[in-house]
Length: 132
Image (cartoon, rainbow, N blue to C red; front, side, top):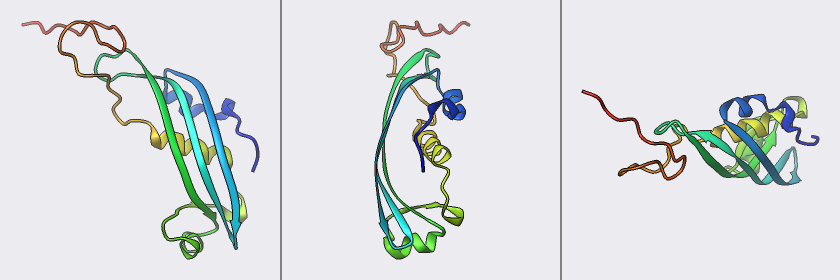
């Protein structure tokens, strides 16, 4: 394992309008052939609102509690409640795994609050008017 290098997180950057900050707190402990990883990934940025098409603030906290091992069976033998992360030949691409976790945590259809009237409270964008 090594340091997290956000410069190589191209997929996350492409999914967001802006990536402001990513913080990682991770504790690793070994249980036989499995490494237990517990912590939290925090992501701050801006994402496109699918309702108003404005820039919407994004603040995510992604809890991490996984077993890293060569097989799901090895992880399940340690703790059946753990999500398994494959480490072929005992090697884990830390950058790819953490970026995958961040991408999976993104909202599928990010939307600001529902408009009642006036500009969007998040982006200050005026909703498009229907024409007949």
